[in-house]
Image 1 (cartoon, rainbow, N blue to C red):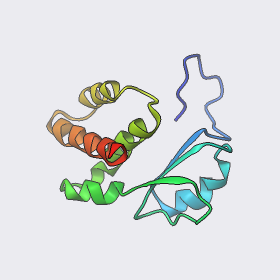
Image 2: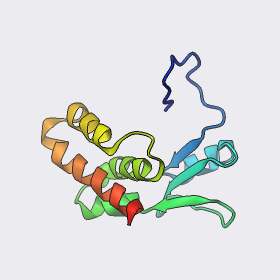
Image 3: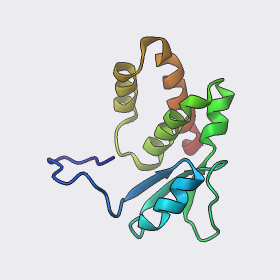
Image 4: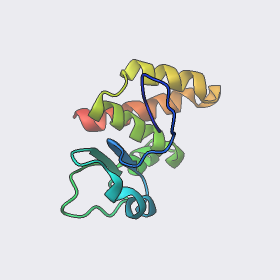
Length: 122
């Protein structure tokens, strides 16, 4: 995803400033593309980090499973991303969740965001 204040003319990222990895395959494919000094967030239980990786390892899938739905691991990771980077305000993320997920899943998704956010802040 590209986040910018100005129009995005080329929607391909060659050296991301932030890289979020939630699978071993993504790790092996994209790990080396991270800009030097960039931020790497990875699902602790699914991504085989190397000793030299400077990464924030978040147990996103495990935390999602503790909420009863593994499928919200991405929302856990979004909460962690916002806590780690401040790229958007937490309230903005919560509003985006409220307006973009199915009504019957809003509470679970907001809970997942909060769990991910707290996992980094604590």
